[in-house]
Every structure is written in C-alpha cells, then in structure tokens.
Image 1 (cartoon, rainbow, N blue to C red):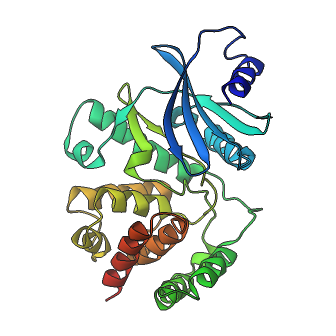
Image 2 (tube, rainbow, N blue to C red):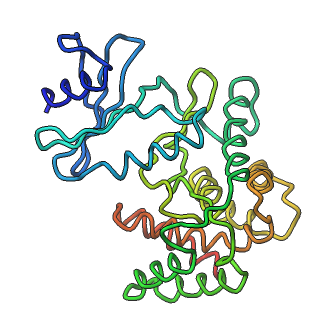
Length: 292
C-alpha cells in the first residue's frame, strides 16, 4: 500500500519520487486506514486509504465543502485509485482540541476560534438555496421513517417527522449540512477554527442539524437540551445564547429550531445508524425523554 501511496503523492506533485517521507498510521477503523505522510516536522499530508471502499464520493463531498468554506477546511489535493487502493489526500493541519464550552467563557485565541464557528453558520446562511438537490426534505423524511419503521424507535421517529412536516420543514431552503458536526471534528489551529471529516457533507440539507448536533456533543445532558427547548428569546446560559446566535446567522427561526430539537436528534440518530449501538441508544433515550 505504501508503494501505491508514494505513486499517488508523486502524481499529485506533492512529494517527488525518492522523497524522504515518513508514514504514521494514526487510525485504523473498519475498512479504511488514516495515515499522516510527513515530509518534515512542519509539513504533512492527511491520507485516507481503503481496499474495500471507493472513496471517490467522499472526496467529492470534501471538494464541495472546501469550495464553500475554504478558510475552515483543509485543502483537498486529490483522489486516485492505484493497485486496488482508493486513496484521497488532503492538507495536513497541526491542531489541538477545541472546547466550545471553554470558548464561550474564554478570551484570546479561544474566542477567535469560536468566531470561526459563527463564521461557518453565517456562511451557511449566505448560501443560495439549492434547487436541484438529489433528495428533497420530504424524501429524506420518508427514508428516515422507513428506516425506523421496523425498530423500537418507530413511533418516536414518526411522531417527530410528522411534527416537522406540520411546521412546514418540507418547504425549508435546502442547505447542505456537515452531517457530523461534533466537537471531535472541530479543532483550533494557530488560534483559528478548522473543521474535519466532511464525508457526510450534503447527506442532509435540513438547516439546523449541525447546530443541534454540535450542542448535543458539547452537553449531552437532558437538562442542557431542555434549556435549549425552553420558551424564551435565546438568552440565558452560554450554550443557549450560542445556539440562538448560530440560528440567527444561519437564517433559521429560533422558535422553529428549539421546537424541533428532538427531530434533529432523530436525524442525528439516523446518521449514526452504523455506529456503536450504545451511542445510538443514548441518542434515542434523549429523544424519548425530551418527548415526555
């Protein structure tokens, strides 16, 4: 595989043949491998490779994300299929974990990175609505409902899908969402925000999904979600004020957002359908508690 990767880096004019490149496997999960290709202590490329999955669609989603949010997304360099290996290469970014909770009460570089989050939501709000999406909101809701129809979560999912439809979500503007917008996928690099893992970008066009999934990842507690749903003007605890501002910047009505948090969590649960069952159950339990 490393020979295939060397050929790809050379073909993309990133590392000429014979370059002294060090490879560090940072993650091996399922049927993909994540690798850092280090040219020096200060420069590297992030590589994802698989013998079993064609990563072309994932790379194309990454390119679309970069075209919209260049300041926040590591640059995509290329995709190749070589010797049975699907290989995608993106810019390597030195970074450190970013805590939204700390940033909401912090100063300096924490606030700068937090402004990057607001910039992301503002850019979402400035996007022109997509007219020719592959899947409408109605079709997306049907797909989710069909998925849960034969599960213990069938009634829960159908209730909140019906609630969303009653509020007119099927006519809401289509804005591609990151799809896995959680704290683990955002970081700070030289004081600025960077967003990773765009493989689910555009699988949902339901505005508000990213805001809710981020808030849930920050505070996956019943009391925190209840405060988001509480009647009010969006003032109060820092996370509530953050979500309110994100909605305003995105062009999403605050009252619609807070009423539909359980639906957003159903969408998030659907996106996690192939993940750890324990994680799925935590999300489903939260939706049930918020529905009571």
